[in-house]
Length: 265
Image 1 (cartoon, rainbow, N blue to C red):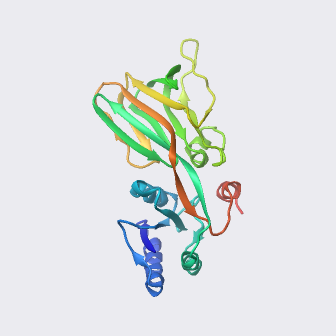
Image 2 (cartoon, rainbow, N blue to C red; image 1 turned 90 degrees about the vertical axis):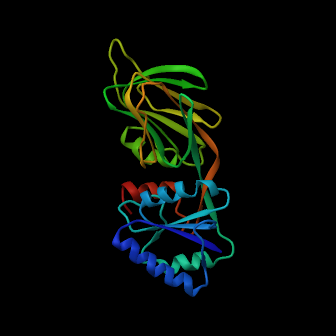
Image 3 (cartoon, rainbow, N blue to C red; image 1 turned 45 degrees about the vertical axis):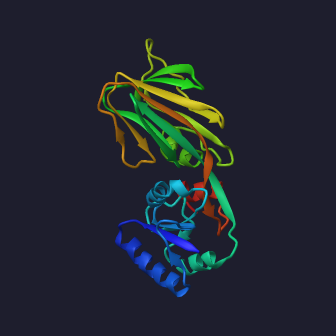
């Protein structure tokens, strides 16, 4: 078994890393950062997102396991004091697993094209002024959006920014994505649908940013992608054929994770 670790910079996470490495060495577990079979994140959900993007090229060959030492642990199954359980889980020859759907986003400006996988959400905003954006569904123009921004999320991402924007919570068994508005401008002249849209697998959303001063795209709340020129930016989002796979040890279902994260145990 080959394992890679992705660890936050906090002192607590670094201590947990060293303690886990000691236990893994005792079990003769191989550490392989390039070709792991299991990726263990130590931190919070931000660390798990970092681990996901670090290994998107190996999604079909890798499973994730998350140890919680951060502030919010929607994706994490283990606490830092449960390292013995982590090792016991890894020693099992067959692992029960669960999977979550992902999005693929393609960003085009002039002759430049960027493609990314998305675990939580992709947001489109502008540094100054109003974002003006054509919103098309399956190549058919739906509306002209004016406002602060737009967010497209996965089912698990629906518990993040989407929730704070008034979007619905989607169970990950629904392979769907949700489009929500960020402070839309609605008056007699400019109008948007004003409601979240839930789109099934097989449909795509195309956002063409027009007349924006320094628009930018943020994927999973990591480093923003800035566009300095005035050329239109085209963002196409669809549900990916790939999934992220987690090792299922505690059998915590989606609604219980949601309850634990927002209401409490």
